[in-house]
Image (cartoon, rainbow, N blue to C red; front, side, top):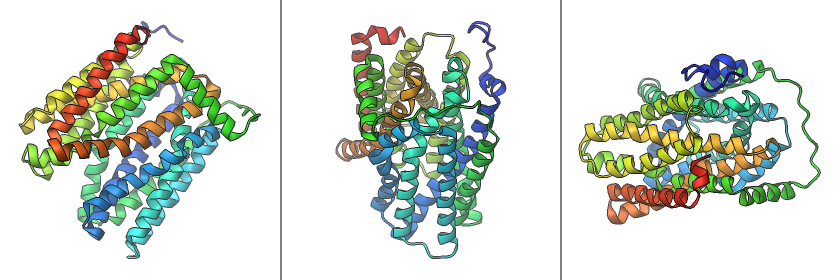
Length: 410
C-alpha cells in the first residue's frame, strides 16, 4: 500500500484500484437514481390521489418508520450473515416491490392503501439492507481506503440527487408516473448484475454463540462504553435532527421567503446536490492527507455557520450559492463522521454499529427532525427555524470539541 503522501490526488483512485468496489459503486449509483425517481413519483402520485399535504408527509414517514423499529435488529443479522448474499436478497426484494408498484399504477389499480403498504414493505427491507450494505463496504476495499470509498458513496448519492428528480420530472410529463417506478425496478437490475460479478475471497461467517437479543445488547454496550464511538454517534444524531431537516423546509423557503416558483425550488435542490457531490470528491482527494478529527471539526463548524447565514438570505442567486457550500460541508461532515466511525469499530460488531448509524440517519432523523423543524417553522417562520437548528448544532459542536480535544486530534 503506498504511503498517504505518495497517493495521487485523484478522487476516483479507489474506483480504479478496487474492481469489486467499482462494480458495486456503479450499480449502486444507478439504483439511487431510480430511488430518487420513485420518491418523486410517489410524492406526486400521493398528492394526486389524496390532494393532502398530510398524506404526502405520511408517505415519506412510512418509509422511515420500519427503519426505526427494525434497523438495530438488522445489524445483528448482518453480523451473523454473509453480507454479499444478504444485500443481494434485499436488492432483489426491492426490485419486486418497485415492479409491483409499477404494475398497480400502470394497470389503474392504485389506491392509497396499496401505496402505504408497499412503502412500508420497502422500508422494512431497507431496515436490513442499509446496515448490511454499510458494513459490506470494507470487504470491497482495504481499511486504509475505507474513508475514500465512503466519500465516493456519498458522491454517488448526491449525483443521484441531482439526476433522479430531473429525469423523473421528464418521465412524468412525457410518459406518466408509472414509468418512474418501472425505471426504479430496472435500476435494481444494474445492482444485481454487479453483485453477481463481485468476487470475494472465501470468508467463514462466525457461528453465533449468543441470542439475537444478547448480540444487540453487546453492540449497544460497546457503543456506549467506547468514548470516541459514542461521541461520533451523538454528533451524527444532533446534526441529523437539527440541520439536515432544512431540506424538508426548502419548498417553504422557495415560495414564501425567496418568492420563487418550482424552477427556483429545483435550482436550490440542485445547488445542494452539486455541492454535496463536490464535497464527496474533495474528501476522497484530501481525506487521508489531513487529520481526520480536524476535518470533522472544521466541517462541522462550517456547515452550521453557512446554514445560519443561509437562513438570512432573501435573494435566490445568493441562496443558491450559499446552498452549494452548505451541501459541500454537509457531505464533508457526514461522510467524515461515517469514515471515522467505521475505522474505529471491530469487524465483528460492524453490522450492529452501522445499524445504529442507519437508525439515526435513515430512521430517527427523518422522523423527528422534520417534525421539530415544521413545528418551529409554524411558530417563528421557516427561515428562523433553519437558523435556530444551525445555531443549536454550532453551540453543540463548540461544546463537544472543547470537552473532547482528543476527538479533534484523532
